[in-house]
Length: 293
Image (tube, helix red, strand yellow):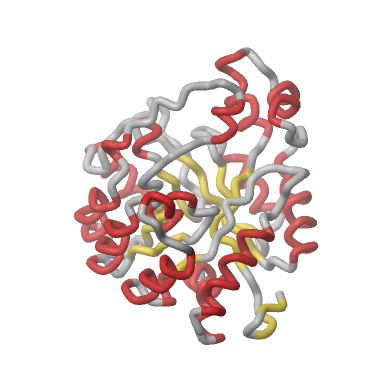
């Protein structure tokens, strides 16, 4: 992709893979099927076959000049959708999957690049013995671990009139400190710069060299602290360095597709900060590629 620093490969660390199973899960509380959910949200109804959805994402990434993306199965139990997508296009996707350590049926981690933990959504401490058992399995399979911290909102749930009874007691990045130290070989990925716990995310990254900060989304949490994107990047670079920042968009649904606006705003902020071409290349894809080499 052409950037102010020249032409290099861009990889997105945060793309939601909203399969038909995801739509069905979202609609279940109101007895809505996938088509009804799509209509209510104004989104494009997903195909039945995850490979077809993967093909649509490949075409979307191609149109925007994006080389690779981490795709997230965004409801527990949907890991097969991203695995199927990655099998169909192994050079384009890294499959991530949301898992709930409290679920009765253990998730199948084989074939995943990362597992995604949402403690506030599912109501557990990262120090729960069931989480530790899951992390042992992930470490054995060389999976990265994505941990959502901070403010958690799901716009689709709000639009459908569904409650979001999340518990922010489990949202602090510092809860990950002892865990990340226990598993030094595991890359821990914190999305949205900690989503409101920016200071704590920086403290965690400073203490744990295996912690990476994902830059994705509009980062609307900045309003809590009166920050702007340039300031956030400046502080993150000062603590974590360019080698532990992972560019992401938080793209999710069609017809919007890949969120070019997020890419442009982050690129502009980093360019104005005077980030070098080498560091920009790391942030916009090199770091993510290195994690999964």
